[in-house]
Image (cartoon, rainbow, N blue to C red):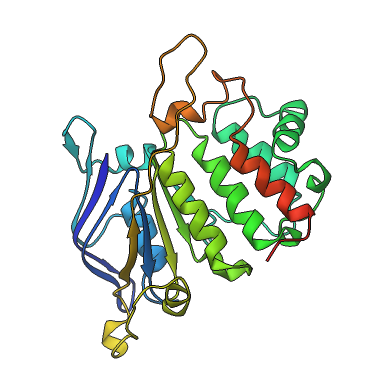
Length: 270
């Protein structure tokens, strides 16, 4: 499955917010996009996922069978925007347990107190349930919210915007993006140009104010596919919507997520 953006322009009340010649996001790939605040990163995240209609240009969803659509509702169905400032980021004062319960409800799985406690326990986060969101280390916050978003039915693409703003090592959330891509998701991560350089990308500085609406692709990776967990009584599958289906798959979450919880308690939070 693929999302293709072609000649997308988004205009605000006073100026152009985004001018993007082209961008593709394919399941099984992680893409790092470099820009700065004010360079249309929010507009791009929303336009790519069918949550904002561009002034000009097209955003096309190509299904696994080759069928195409520009229907925003279909784009929204298969995408999740993770921790986008002012849009999908959780309130800083909300306890972590509440955030987990709300996201489990969005994933259409049991979200009561018992289910929430079990989810937190499976991810080695029981001792953090009462912490405010703004007390969660940045690396863990990004991983937790991305993991919850990935469990929503039909989601095949994840967009993470400026995870660096919460601190921590960029290598940690870029590794997370590649691990999710290995599970079969298409992952788009937006960061600053300097952060992209820290990750080894050769990204030139913006030449002038006229370049402001144009984020640039910094890195693109296609990690080896991770082994799929078969459903009970079903053949092995590589569909990520099946790998993380908590309603049909009673097994614990993948060990990668459990390791993340343990690492934070050992003091390696970044």
